[in-house]
Image (cartoon, rainbow, N blue to C red; front, side, top):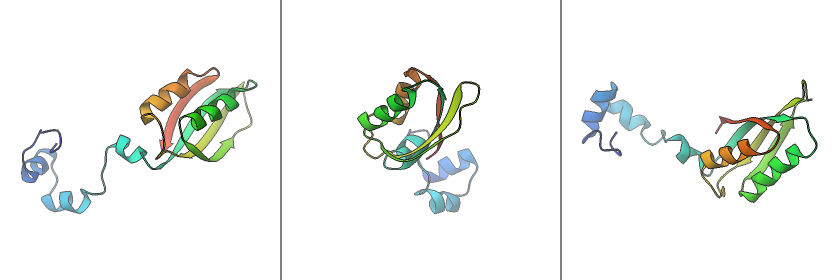
Length: 119
């Protein structure tokens, strides 16, 4: 609220959201917008991919071309023509916003769904 100009003082902002000033000062450095947290952090992605040759390869190339460093990959055995893939990646060098990157992944052939599980 302070950054957006919705409140002029800490006291005004804390009253509007119903927290104490001491709670604000205690936690103010620990709370960040999701997009801020996503930069320079390890993000866990979950993708639902069609069980077709080359689909995972295209996704992994997207991670590499966008500057994401893949740390872990865990894929389930496909069932019903769909595999669940979890990818842990370090995103400090991501060449796009996390939202743009997710959108790009979602447009790839064979991607049923792509989302962030944790970051």
